[in-house]
Image (cartoon, rainbow, N blue to C red; front, top):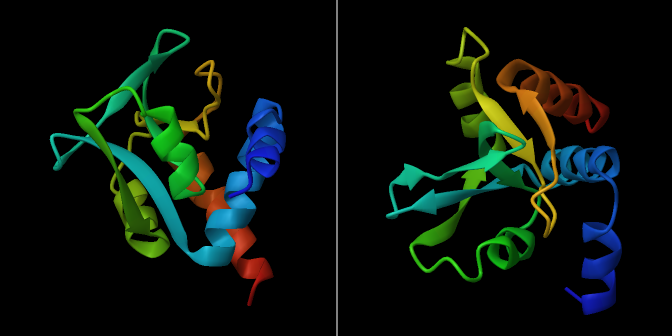
Amino acid sequence: MHEKKYQNIIELNNAERYDYLIRKVADFETIYLIYEKFWQMSTSDINGIECILVFPEKNFAQEHIKLEKSKSVKKKDLYKFINWLEKDKSNKLNLAVFPNQNNEARIVNSSELKNDLLNECEQYE
């Protein structure tokens, strides 16, 4: 991705980055997560809330963890991700959607993200 495009997107506010992720993930049917030690999803403390970080594209996720050698980026199929979100019946899972360099992100629960992704996917049918 061109540096100027990257900067324009990452500088969007939390709501705009959230919308960008929803559109991009629905379009390409993939989402990117941060893993630690290859098999365990990594969490971060954002505004005092433990969250799983999700990204619309690999390069944004890679840039976010560039100094953390123990972490890696994994691509996940959208529908497998949605199935995983559905297992969180209590909605206690917090997701930080597309955090920027300052670790600012919109934080949502599993059902909100799942519903927004599914609603966007319906637009593509």
